[in-house]
Image (cartoon, rainbow, N blue to C red):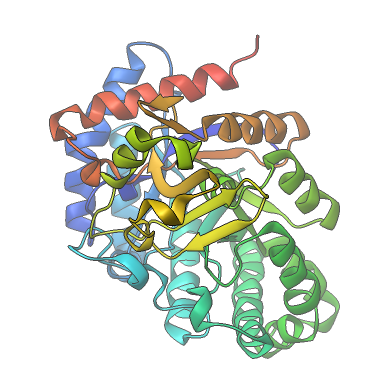
Length: 401
């Protein structure tokens, strides 16, 4: 997946639980965004889209006629499908998502069925001559999936999906990479954990068993597993983990784990936590009831303290003694270096983008800031403007000097 780089944005920022609401969202926000970007020559034609397809939408598009009609509808409006986000199963804009975003996990046959059906849909939607990816949950919520038994089941199901994608490539000529998206406090969250899963579980006995049971020939097992399952590297998630983007991507390279796409996103960051009351108060304004905002805090001894949600970080200032830096899984605009008095992890996003382009790790780059609706004091009428600023800032980073 190392042809010319493609930039897109993920439509999970818009409510789209079925095909009708997906089309409404594209008309309401994406067409105006396309028009705004075209005026500055920042968007190719057709415009690549990173579509979020819920399980319900996938089931609607499972009929070849419906899928072709949707592809024609997109083409008439100057769009093509670059990649899919199939991490959330559904109801991503419900009143309270939190931990439910991890359900169903990869232990559940519904996750396997949803992903396979999405893969069939994507082969009908995507342009010829390009590879693509489907980002998906990297297991489930970590506390629900401790131990090797879960990883074995996960690997078997992914092996079945890999076999299915190998058949689809044989039939359609289109290569797909099912891209696991590590996230703080999920089954796979750090880069070393992810590499270990591929080496010991997916490429080992459990993954091979799953691919074999799905009908993959014995002499093609390794190729199916290594070609059709990889990683979606989210720059916000790994920054919250205090990982170096360059070191993480280099580790994936060294282990020969495919990177199906890179999601460009930034986390909230607060420095000198123990001495910055203004910043701490500003950070607490980002507590909200819809999404899970895992919060990692590094103290002055280098120890990292992990909290499931920003709302669970102790409010008593005595707990913050010797805390140096907090990072919060709250996707903030990728063009923002700061949201005063807070900082962001934009530098990590830029580092990952430039390293990946230089090393030709992937050709898919997807802006994924889905949290505008829950941003403090956000004005909905400014959404297209904000999305355009993000796109233009990343496009400028990607342009040759």
